[in-house]
Amino acid sequence: QVQLVESGGGFVQAGGSLRLSCEPSGSILSINHMGWYRQAPGKEREFLARITTGRSTNYADSVKGRFTISRDRAKNTVYLQMNSLKSEDTAVYYCNMQAVRRGYFSADDYWGQGTQVTVSS
Picture 1 (cartoon, rainbow, N blue to C red):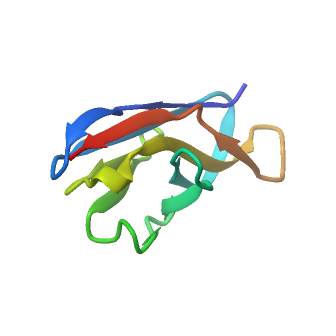
Picture 2: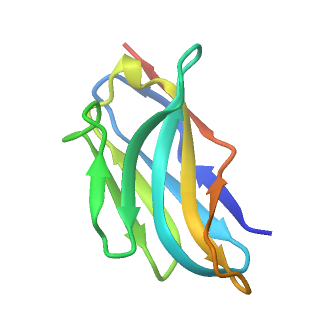
């Protein structure tokens, strides 16, 4: 029942910006943290950014200073603001969430289906 839906991907020229959104749905008791990953063709899935319940954040070196993760707890939505985009940022971007479902004691990891980001030079 718990799902993640990503949106905001698209085509952009190098140097431009995009904002990705990830909206959870379902019977969620609590969220430990949410984050973003990406996977380019022929590459392994790469960690990008994570934000915790306490608003603590961490970033991969490849996006530090360019990408910003934020969370709206009232809406249960996490965002990834991407600035100064480069052609090497082209990938499918995935939302990740570690959460506890209502009626459970342990947390599980959930993944969205991904949204395509294409940066042209």
